[in-house]
Length: 254
Image 1 (tube, rainbow, N blue to C red):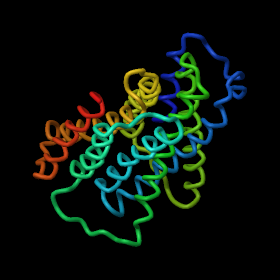
Image 2 (spheres, rainbow, N blue to C red):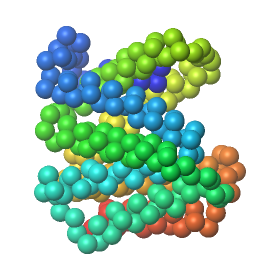
Image 3 (spheres, helix red, strand yellow):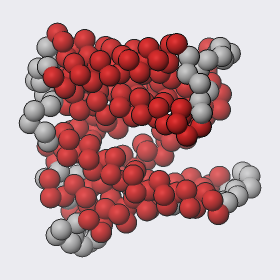
């Protein structure tokens, strides 16, 4: 529901209506199919990581993946990464870690270490693929249809996953899950669309964009936890928020 809602939002935003029959002929079409599959794989890996090792571990693995497109931006695309900007990226990684640390110590099963590692690599590959698509494959006027096709691919992969899972156990879809999926679909679409737009920015390079995007998400989700759910942050969490603000200032200003 989430992915199909995001797909519909994108198609309603298109200035130049593109026929579905034209989409398979686009240079980026095969890439969207691969991204859709990867979306579903990483979604399920994140869920498994959260169940086995905790939500904080899954969050850290996801957001620390910003290091992958940052490194690729420097070595593959020749982007400059000055000392202060590099310091900002390092502080961003520290901010993600400290902001996501739970108050209580959670048991850690070393045998499950592959889960956050795969989430880290998969999330990084998704970001790097979007970065590559923006640079070489997708013209700006096709951003909405590109994003919609990615979500359509993810939605179809999700349906296939549910179909096969139905043979191994019962699947219950609650009405609130449908409403939640629709509600999440709108921001989900814009998260990809605005990321593509941000990567076009001539002032900020991709290292700055991915750092600000990932760290800001962690920081604001932490603050929302305080305001909406009355969460009590530890001293380390507050250090993480402080580092997040400092890292954003460094990568944006330098």
